[in-house]
Length: 389
Image (cartoon, rainbow, N blue to C red; front, side):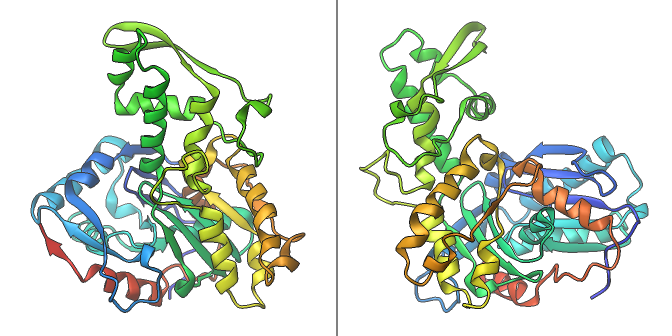
């Protein structure tokens, strides 16, 4: 594999289901962030594979990519790339190699198509695909650790040892931002049920609801069910909210601010939930249990949380509290009780993978397995069950 660490300036494009982030490697923050959730949902479905499929992954990580329209999805993504270059980056594509950052199991046909149009249509000198968890870990300064990436529809828990993803031990939990958002909206609607503001609340747009979530959201990092016991969490007022030409001061009470986050930690706040998810118990703990005994300690000492929701106050501390509670319960993991560590670099979790890629590209001769062959092979296997709806 060619060396890609260099002083040369690259264009970094981070492909996600909610956002595409792009910019130049000399800057550690993206130059532009575009929302792509609507574009992605119009083009792609992600479905669970049949249980009898022979893979090394757990049932929750088995996905099939379904492209809804074989023509329009290509046209839509081609337009997006053109807009990136002409409206935002405003640079000559021939002058800059491109680094494509992708989450594990990003639709490989979509990835290949973007790579194809960059090379054939824009004559980009070089395109390199890199797995997001590896460059995210780069922000910690270590090559070994566990990356927990909270995405739109799922949370990926990826162990990395000496720069190599341990692909057989990747865990995917079917719980992401969209699931959390539904819980938050239900709580908010319940809070204002049969109140004068009820109709106004129901008219809040998706983008505005996202802003309310990130402005008001807070995670109860203490392991107790009674939020009233925490004096540091109070009601939040979102002032001068404009909905349908009406101004209101939206009060988000402490329960609405905190309860929806429990969906990631066993859903104790919603005892009637049919499916229970726990990113620590089902993700991090299982990764450690399935890891080689010689690598467990090193993996547990560098646990990194990524994704927009991880930037909410208290989220990383809650993960640490859950680990402190759960690790001693596992006999084989008990020796790690005093050694695990949730690393919190002073970089927003929302851009940690982008920042890590920029940091990596500013150094020379970095020996990392950025595009692991086995992981790509398995991703291809998952995506070869392609159906045209």
